[in-house]
Image 1 (cartoon, chains in turn purple, cyan):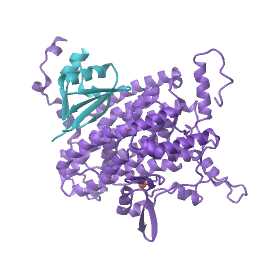
Image 2: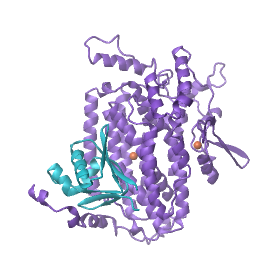
Image 3: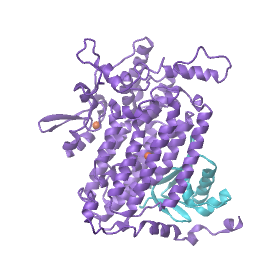
Length: 532
Length: 89
Ligand SMILES: [Fe+2]
Ligand SMILES: [Fe+2]
């Protein structure tokens, strides 16, 4: 103990040990191929126009070697599974604030966990294709991390599938359900780009600029609402995230330092992928503001901390390379007032087609919204929500039976309003080879116009439904009583009337109340819980 | 001026790490949230292995921080003895 306490401050005894060890593990492992030309071994390395002269300039600031990686990852897994097991053994679900919370997890499992798996595939691919060994080692680690994230999330949430509705067919739904095409198409767009664009799309824009908004306030919120399982997988994933963020930042700095010709290409990717990622986060805004019964912070507050303050510092720093903040940055900052309310309004209307429950905020929750959004909630959203709540209480809940127009790029229904005018729906049009395509914003229109050949191929759920591609094999469109929307819901594998019912009166609500009562009483709680 | 930050899961090890950070970075602001703790410091922060070892009363490898980390911001520079986050001006 004494030698530790009396040791001089580290600054005076700086040892190069870690840096040397890292250099030994990541340099000189590569060779120039002779049986095959290098261009054929790394076929995707140059077509995007990014010029790299010296891969040895790549620095991984974490300098994690493979042996240390396995050691710390194993420790994270042991901690995580100990918490998950304890939570399940102790009937942890009954400590939740409210079963409404579970609907945010249904969205997470169907929308986010499949992206973790795609990130695993993406980094494995990019790690194979980048010609520098330092970058390859870092991508390999991230690929393994992402596989771990997918597995631990599925494992943790499978506990809820034993007891609650809507958790059963998440992978099947991810490829089909209308709003799940939003996260799905985001990742499909990234993984079909070249390796350098993928690094900017996922490594930099998503991991560095945006991922905090999902994993930090939402997971802290999961803990606040009593979900130790989600807290454990979320923070365990996030402990890898610092390394991923650092990789993304290193990737962008490396590209910009290698050749001045890389700047305009990288800037375009930042513009594009900031906006793509931001649109996906619409779902997160709604989770924070409407789906967490006990709220940690509003979307607006989270945006101010993790985007405006932190992203602002980042782009100020990158200005030395000639990088400016992404196009659309200002609009995203202005829209923080409206994003979550506009999204929740949409899901409330389309409850019949979504395998999670929705509700109108209680009077107390509306007051929370007014306090957090003093410049927008009372004026634009409270009257609509109070009207819907009254109608629902009177047995006349509003369902929108008309399918919405989707944005050709982000695939979100046209629910966003014009910049500066929250009373007018925003849409943009582009012409391509004689066809008209619709986008939700200037950001998505710019993306479409730059690469129309990519986005005209989009698999848009609403168009696909109208084309008759979303029915099961036993559906008979010629039958007199054919109900197309019901057939679509069945094709999604939703348990009709159960998974897609309003929260009020749902089986989840009834079961949770009954089981909760049993925790403090020896009397059976009013009959056996439904469907248990 | 820009702020750098680091956040940890709340636990016994991170309590010692956060104490070490606030000792060595007098302008640090500690922000406790459910199950996590976030530390903000203007411009840059340095975390010293030796201070953490004093707080925890045991040997500590700075890479052990990765087990408890949630997020950070700024450029990372890490050696065996110190871990620095900074924005270059
Ligand atoms: Fe991940
Ligand atoms: Fe869009």
